[in-house]
Image 1 (tube, rainbow, N blue to C red):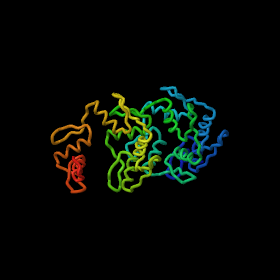
Image 2: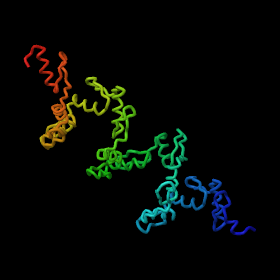
Image 3: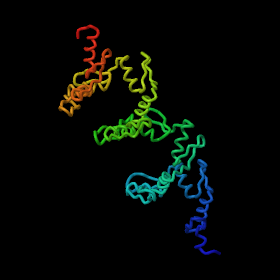
Image 4: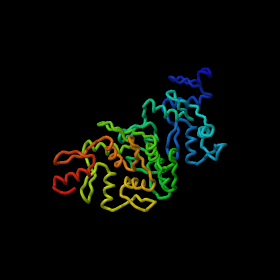
Length: 345
């Protein structure tokens, strides 16, 4: 008969684990062999160990005999309770060897390590796309099946991902969990919050590969690229005018519809374009944000400021089509051209 030490030691390659009894060693060896000898009678799912099967069966029975001493939460297994309790204690005993990240469970650490190794062990049988986590694969597979198991109890709308349902629920509750620390503006969606933050940070992560101009938003880059290609995919159905960007098309459409969506709360005057609204607001606020470095004169509008600068620079960008004489202001060209036509200016 072999000694207890020899019989309770796993001799498989790179293992060396020891066990209290032969039964536990036998169960452990099944893990090496990938054998799942214990099957659930309710759903036919199979497990390597009898203990894992018992924990699983509690999903069907609803039994949760392990209670958290800190909060009302209950769990089906002691391991689940132990992991949960770390949320209270803040304990993160599993550290990443590649970076400073630490985790409360070994499974969370293993998932994280795949981000460093690039390993994607879960592949879609339909399109071959691979994922780091099994949950991500499950959610992806629903794009093929059309399954939407997460249902909103307020309106009945279905979602493929639980996270999408959580986000949708805010349309009913009005919750706005994302708050800008600079201006206090609140947002319902994280992507809207991230886009807004760029107003304050000045971040412009999207670069045009043709001219290296940078943009804060991907749709602004897409619109800009059309200035190189000349593409104008947005055509007005009333007058046929075409636009490179959808925002310019939408603003143009208001000329035909008569919509004036921007209203001044001071005097009630309404505007088609937000730029016109902002210029109008300065009449009430007295704001003059454009200042001349040469003489200190302030202007409410950039266009007026640019015209004024010519008095200092001597720039004359407007030419007479008849004699070529140059002028600083467009109005001066109109007056001058009348002398060629025989009109009195």
